[in-house]
Image 1 (cartoon, rainbow, N blue to C red):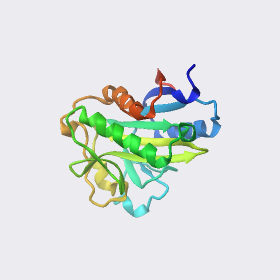
Image 2 (tube, one colour):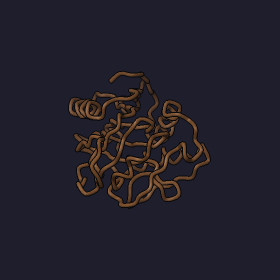
Image 3 (cartoon, one colour):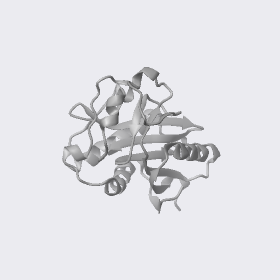
Image 4 (cartoon, rainbow, N blue to C red):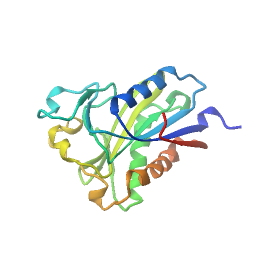
Length: 217
């Protein structure tokens, strides 16, 4: 018999507005109970800046036409746009016996392993969550824990317009350069990388029964 903590639902949502998706995962987390199956949502967002709980206004360096949304995740300001692979991890970490640090490490390692499959060497930094290639940031992390369950997650730059990152101090770090898969010779699309990311995440999340759905909350 498969136990509830061994089951995972993966939802491929395509391009979605940030605020609607944020509200949906917040509602999911609020309404879930000990019988709820964990989910990972894979999504791209229309252009938006999101400001984390600790976010400071000065990290937005200039006026912009891109909307700025104050979010309840951890971290500072970042940018989302099509061509960026976002994974929202809706996981009962208490049931999985994880803490926040171990979940962050699992996410970072999954991205590092994914890039290694394309002969790109990436690292994590203990003092600055995320994944870096040659000092440039390729993936950002921001999590929220409520009732022992995580939501929000990771954003991996795949093939997007990086210019808006110049309008902010990414993740609160002045002068931090961003990079993306395309610039490192990885030609795979968001759609192609998505199942590979799930595979790498699951090497440490260790779900034994995974069910996938396309374009539905």
